[in-house]
Image (cartoon, rainbow over all chains, first blue to last red; front, side, top):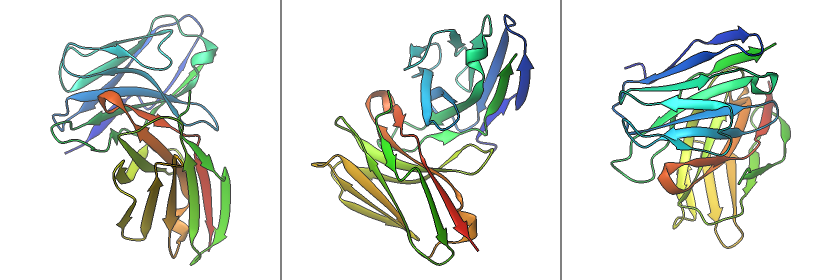
Length: 114
Length: 110
């Protein structure tokens, strides 16, 4: 049982390049989330999904797209990377059959945009 | 916008001492959660307190919640060097979304 796995762990991009971050969970969780964490800041929600085939915007969605084609995977895409998107990206999932459950986090993807 | 705000931003104590961190928030909540983040790692859930609860314990952790003051505190008793980490409070809202504070960096000196 791996929990929440994020790939890649590190990546350096040039401005304007595109890439996709992958989040995979093996806990059969319904809801999944993408956050970004900047120095000295807490996590801010980018996008989230309440189930396979659904996505919704969070607090800071601009410049990102997401897809949830399979229940276990949640992809975060940067179509044209900008230096302001340099950050650490975290994925999380939650079991929602019972209320008031914690989110389970991956170890993050460290992304630098030059 | 960040819902929770932790206080202090940084705390340095000696091993064996107690550490107290506070969190204030602005709007109504379903629950309040505390997470720990070790350097370079993801967040690990510590404890969740529901909006109708006032106090909760888990091992060396004690969390209080005062919804009238929109505040919570996390107490770590008998701290250890391994407790050195950043601690975040997060308020739970609709669609199980969490809104995080900026965190408290706790350093426990051996």
